Length: 108
Picture 1 (cartoon, rainbow, N blue to C red):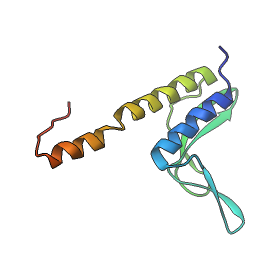
Picture 2 (cartoon, one colour):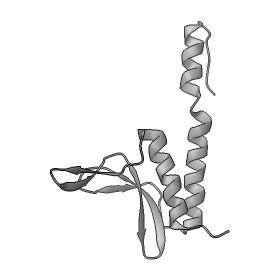
Picture 3 (cartoon, rainbow, N blue to C red):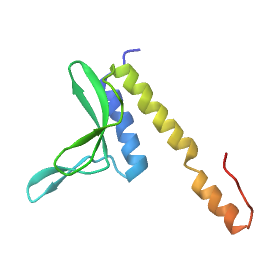
Picture 4 (cartoon, rainbow, N blue to C red):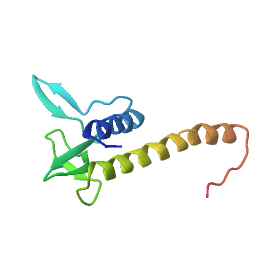
């Protein structure tokens, strides 16, 4: 199956929604578009893709992946991140229930 940039964008939207409550990466301030710090984005140049994270409102980014990769590789990276976040989403709830009941729970 061919992996497209659109499929990577969908996974990126899931990542931003899981971590921040919505998929928005930019906001309009005084009529100008500004990036939202700590949101993830895909950088595309020289035929490769890279996962980045905005570090300021001017559009500066921090590279999350160490190198440019194909759309398929980036899709697998994003899918893996989203899977881990979904699998671990219940842990804060579980830990708070156990603490409320006075049960000691050690994470390994």
